[in-house]
Image (tube, rainbow, N blue to C red; front, side, top):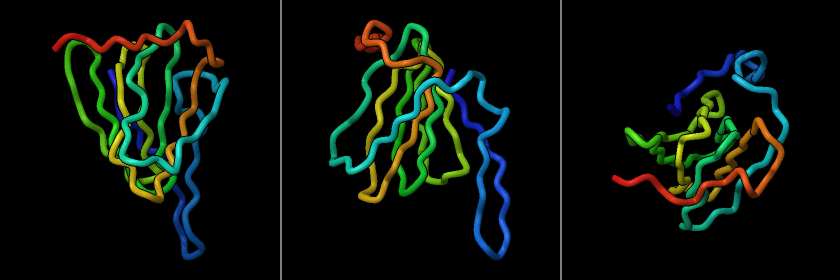
Length: 122
């Protein structure tokens, strides 16, 4: 099931430093980021193998998740919050603010055969 990780953040008068170290349940093989999104929904899939960690570095967005049993919406609006998506988490990303930058770290290299596009029945 998808879940939130609060990332270790160091704050002082100079600003903030957020660290992603020894907290992800996988080794990172791919990093991508999504930005400049209009009012479209992104995603609309789950995976056979890939685990993902999503961090909204700027602005905000909503990630809808359905794991076959339960549904939940996650509002990502702080760069110190990370959403872990398991392979069985069918998800969409929407409601991007104009300044949103969503970074995703993935456990696997891109493989089109890893994607499952059919949503779960409600």
